[in-house]
Image (cartoon, rainbow, N blue to C red; front, side, top):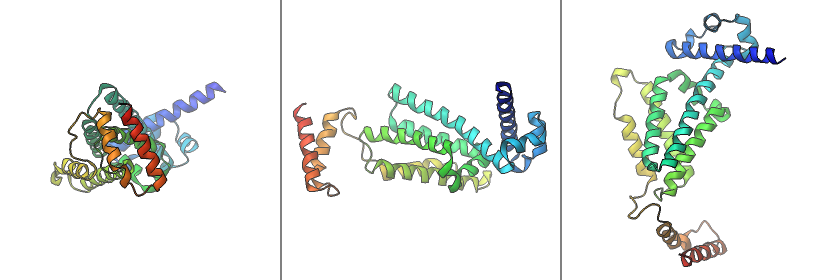
Length: 238
């Protein structure tokens, strides 16, 4: 039983790798059952048994490539946090990397950008978690002037829209500064002015939060009172 399972996994991996190479080099039309079978060293019926049809194979390929890419991004984000890299520099690097990935893998990007697939794709969910970590670090530095959820939406919308626009434009006509201009436009919507003090200065952040707490009308009066009480206690302990 174990040997049969190992053989099945090996065949599946070889098929996905062969299809991914064809997809990247020649596009979706090149991903035929015959071509993939030859590249993977399997018989064509094996592809149908493992993936059902060509669409199933393409989805598996997209998930495989995207998962590998997202795992690498997650490692970079964790390293940036551990090394104390400026959150905005890390966010900018992520934006640039995503744009480069989309332009280098247009067919996979288009597959995984379809709304129906985005909602169910494990790799898309993992990618969102990576972006959440980046946005959270910016929030912790005291730079966000919108909610983390709003910042996430603006970064995603700007990034996906930029890549789609560039992919829809002939390479020789693409604006090389479009990505950077859009990123700056997004930052202008989500960031405060640079903090005057060290972003690690929790006292300054607590003082600022205490100042606005009474005006947070989305909270009830009792909730605002409790919040200000907590903040006053935190300040008294400094």
